[in-house]
Length: 427
Image 1: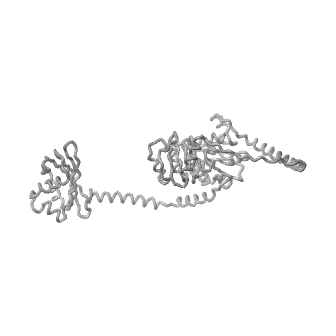
Image 2: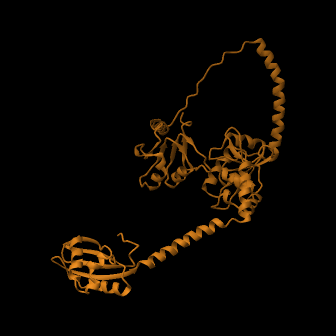
Image 3: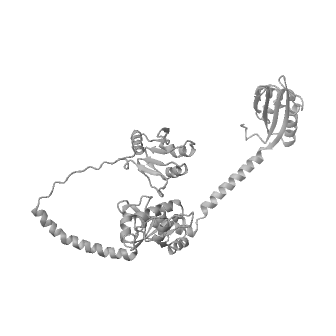
């Protein structure tokens, strides 16, 4: 209902019921007709409306089973006494058209009080926002400066361009964490010999580093942390394991918690035995012995190289046989590749169910909202665009098993429960 806020001080609300079906014009006509002359010339409704002291009468009415019910609103700029008299006069109306009617005044609302309440509530919100914005203490400034330095200190290491601290190359001992946010948090507290695996598939760079350095795996205290730890223990030579407290992530730990976790680290083979995993980590002394052996092997290889060169000079080299690697895809991956090619340059996304049928096709700009709102069982999402962190988070929430896109965006944490494929993976 719309009322004129510039002329209305009070709003009369009256409940109407009739024994027959009536329409809005019948009700308005009955109000004017049956109150005419009842309160004298000074409070005649028609004159009051012409002078603007009574606003437009609004009616909301509905009919059911041969009867009608509704609400009548009468805006008034009269004083309190006159408004109350006018309201009570409405209860004298007993007929609307040919039907018996009953009108009961439910309330007289002071519109100005409602406005003041809204002003107070809005003022509270504005004040809260102002106080939040003005709380910039010395600590906040120091944190801002510290975070900017952290971002500058983060480097990309290895062929997989893994997020790492500046001391990863020179340190004899390194800390392996899950993602970029974990690296940032450790850098915040001065720990610079840290590197992230960025997912459950342990990169070859981490495997190579684990052969040369003393490795401490520092993982989250949740299911995802356990999965990454299992993978690390199987493919890399991990020496020690540190875990965040149950239910917490490394990226959210305080300095005291980080120091405590690293101080309480346990030998990797102890964790491997607990998780029933054959550990690939040799003792630190074994790594040193192997380094000596590798140096000896390198010297022997250099001695043999001269002999091999002489033999090649005496014997023609065999002609190399060219082999072309053939990438084999599962039926599901072949299907995803086909759908991704169909979507090329369309900026659209398709939602697939467990049988591979398309449930919906939407624009990539509305993909996240569509996924959050859909009640259908989506198994895979294929989009002609960049896979974002928000899409992956929603995929985890909705139990979506696969997300396929053109390429991967700036992902802070790659979920372990979702298979993420890019155009390059399917080429």
